[in-house]
Image (cartoon, rainbow, N blue to C red):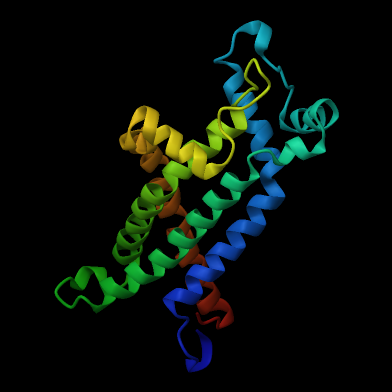
Length: 210
């Protein structure tokens, strides 16, 4: 915080992460639905493929063929996942950085790139572990098709999570964790290390203080 003002509490950071994640996910849900369907097309028989030309064609066809509300199908798990991601990713990075800075025995982690790398890697691991179950539930809900009787296997995020655990076991919620963490962890490391360098430049050039 600038000017010696009180440091933002961990709880406040969590709330800000929840709010920003929910807002962004709600706006971007149609893109997410179209993208997931396009990715799933390759696993479907040719006669069942939707064959969207691109993500925008997918959004237009979904709205025209299935109704505009379908663009927000599965929006609850999308929003919940984004809330979890933002909450954990943003808050734990700052908390990890502050904790490492207090560890006098680990002098190399008190400042600079080693500190930023360790903090962002910690954040990436925690965010991956917390968000993967919601990511799996979100993908299954958005990609499902109606059953023969017109009903759907997955009705809401909590029912989806419970059904996966009951039919496939708890470990199924973290299936594919290694590649998920590889992607999410590297993304988190890159994002925060770039952010820290931008903050350093802003501080040097413009006197910005955070």
